[in-house]
Amino acid sequence: MHISPRTVRHLCDVGHDAIRVDEVLPNNASDRSIVTWAAGQERVVLTQDLDFSDIIALSSATRPSIITLRLSDSTVDNVNQVLDSVLPRLEDCVRLGLAASVEDERVRIRRLPIN
Image (cartoon, rainbow, N blue to C red; front, side, top):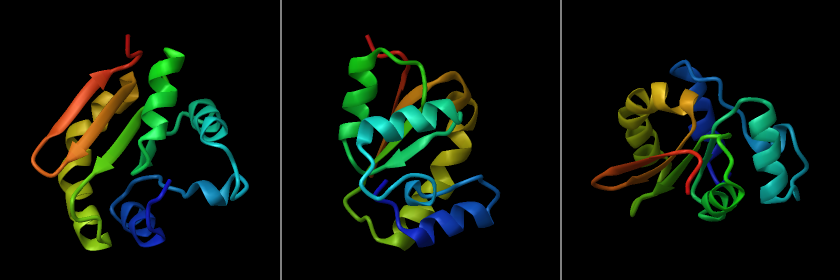
């Protein structure tokens, strides 16, 4: 959520199976329904919205993995560059269930469920 269509195209171009939520759910889908859909489809939620982390943490869920971008520069070019750098390091972890917070200078990773 809150990810540019250009970033989704970029992710697909570099080999990721990325889609925007509005391609599969109504534009007014709740955050909780997005989390439920992502878990059922074995997807990872990539977002700039902190609500998703709260939903997953409060549910004690192990899926879906979530990657939250907390960047000071959220221009498409910067987001794409950061994702190119970070995603290869997270690839194995997302299969296990994680909550990752990607910041300017660091990436924080927590295994799910968050207790």
